[in-house]
Amino acid sequence: MQVEGSVKPDSYEIKTIENGMAIVLLRKNISEKTIENEDGSTDTLYEYDEVEVELIERNNLESYIENNFDMIFQAGVEEENTPNEPSIKERLEAVEEAIVESVGI
Image (cartoon, rainbow, N blue to C red; front, side):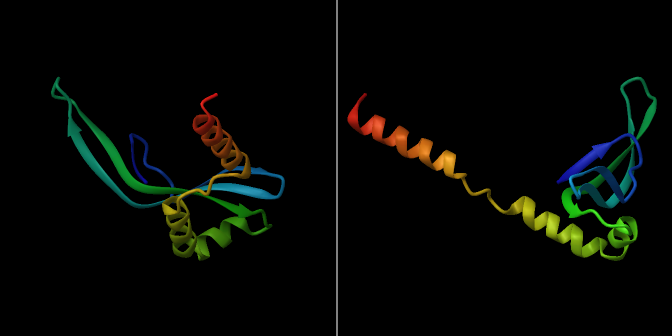
């Protein structure tokens, strides 16, 4: 996903580690641009591609991310672009709704 911010981001950020899993933000294609405000002042913005991935916690997590960055980033992009399958609960609710509509209750 394309993101824009006023702070230059690191290439990755380990957000949380819980229950043996790490939530990691990966960023690439970081570019800096200067914009001019209405009052004539300027601000620096950073644009970059960002994905969030879930990785198994490990002792060498940071070096694992650095050594496999492109592969992990690509897996994150593919995960974002994969449509989510409805859960069993959502499927049952859809069936129930269809039955109610067809019976006219």
